[in-house]
Image (cartoon, rainbow, N blue to C red; front, top):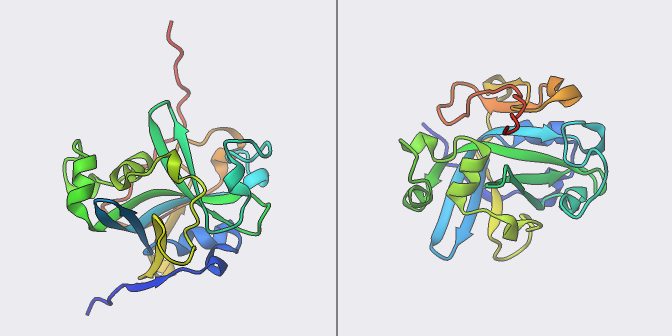
Length: 213
């Protein structure tokens, strides 16, 4: 018998832990995006940990800026950034306030609100591709910079919340290098995913962008 996912919202204490504890523990949890068109529920299947100023791969490695300020806490808030001039990506801030660690939400399975997600992801060939990759995930959920700083642990109505869901067991979790991270940050095996899940995105090593001639 398949267990019914727990719909209890995760408390702030869940996120107020070291990022390498929080990241794998997010797998199997349910991210709820509430919109004017209705809710979308996504089961997290792939994430990456970023350890702030201890991590050369982190946006916060060189300190606080206007762009990354949300990463410095409090935990349980949403950090959204814009990348490559066209895509948004979403993170959940964790760890003690001031440490600037966060978990990038890389992929998931849409379990409710599939029709809404399909309207936003017209190029998806099937439902497994709706949120297969961090930019696709944000697009399917209608996430942009307007949601940067959202408190996912706030009481009452909030546009983003994380439910307890059905966490996976340690033997179901795989880990390896983070996708597209260059330099010293590229060696950390801080990408975590549910083994053999079809919604997990493929690994790609960092490839320098070619300058136009």
